[in-house]
Image (cartoon, rainbow, N blue to C red; front, side, top):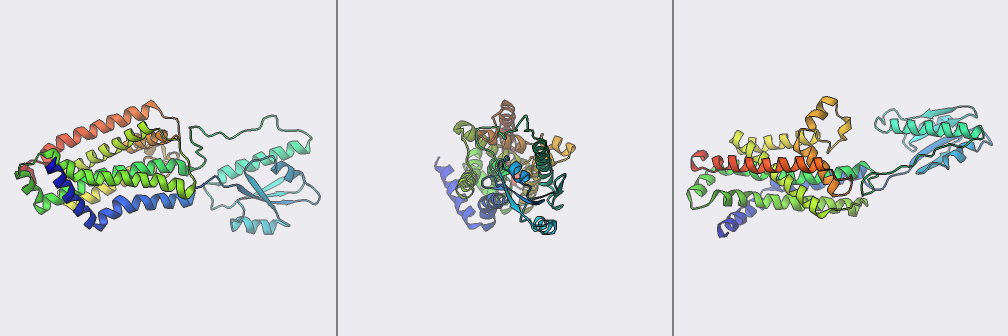
Length: 352
């Protein structure tokens, strides 16, 4: 263990002296959770509705009062309401002339407009029933599946960003650092010394993995402190998916190191690999937004299953056995790759 701590301490000094490593491993994941938090975080915002009605007709406002999570503002004319929609002072504009409803939408809100249009149809239908003296026979109620109140997309992003922090740390723990040590000749000198391969690999990877776990934990805390995001944590599953993410990342890093000899190229390839995988795994953007072919590819990637498993561990969705089984398989594969390629990479003859 003395040799392990010696390697660990040396790698800690190297890590702290490298600003790029600090940025990629620590700052970038924290910046992402803040950026996505300001976009999608916090409690569900009420939908702002602007209304223009004929004089002395209060039916529209009685109908709007039946809908939860709505706030409405009355406008004197359609022109003023159109400008309010264009400036996004309101999300949805409704013009009621006593017989029909005109819906005003901002065409640039591509993601929001389908839901807003559906809401406008529900309001128009409820208004039609009230005009006829009837009430809706069925009132829909919004229910979130999972243990946590997953009211926004941000609830789904946070577990994925935690996986990103650990997965990325695992890749760079092996890919960039071992390639750099090999190019500088440090790896050759270490391997001819009486030093076991697992000691070297463990000492190199441990510091970055610890930083990755710490970064994931800070993501979790930032989401709760700054954006009032609540989770229902399953400790055992959380530990499992965190460990699985690290093992998968180290396995990918070993593959990159075996393919690329130069440290700059290894780090670049590792970054491209991680970012491509994350965009195809439904972590940064909703998975349903991808074309069917890319969704098929995404479901073959470990980040997809790790992210869903982490969501289950935080209570955002109900944990499923498929995510656990597939993540376990990828974690074991990562261990196998590290052992197999590690024996070849950590042979004195392989460092020339």
